[in-house]
Image (tube, rainbow, N blue to C red):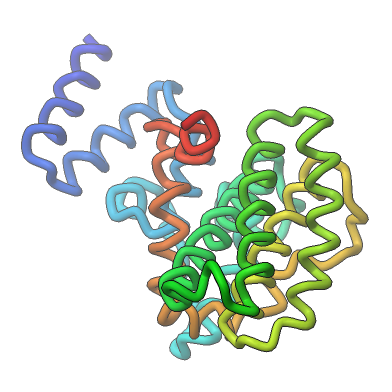
Length: 246
């Protein structure tokens, strides 16, 4: 009977596409132990409407000022899977993965925006060398994150150092911001896999205001991250693994 009820709830959502139907389905999956409540909370933290409606405690507001919203949201990413009452505890492996995936998503999106701004200059401008270094870094960071193999990790360590150096001297403003996003994501992957100094800063937390400028504020930063991370959180595919395999 319970399986039939779950299937009926899923059918209603897929046929009608209503947020309340998806929320009812997700709640029932969690109630029956068929879905990790931490993943549901992570999807809610990323702003997925049905997940927000389904969790017992929706994510809190992040303050009235857009810049402060982004600051608070970034700082809470590693605990996005935890109930609000436990939000001050140490990050869990799941929370750490959420944060790393957000770093990768924002790094890739920042590079895409920079490439569009460069246009034809991406092949012959002074910024081209830095851009292509950062593109290689994103690729190796994703491969290292998915495979956990020694070879991409070794390349990633070298590229991450080169990227930090190139980003620090980048004269083009958007390139500097994009580079910091990418280098920070690569360092976060290394840190997540136990390959980096845990005291070294992530990078994204150092440029909260710049991230808001690049993507157009807190809501767009969150939406950009959610496009890649929510499907994984809800068990509907892994965009990072798919990109690496493709």
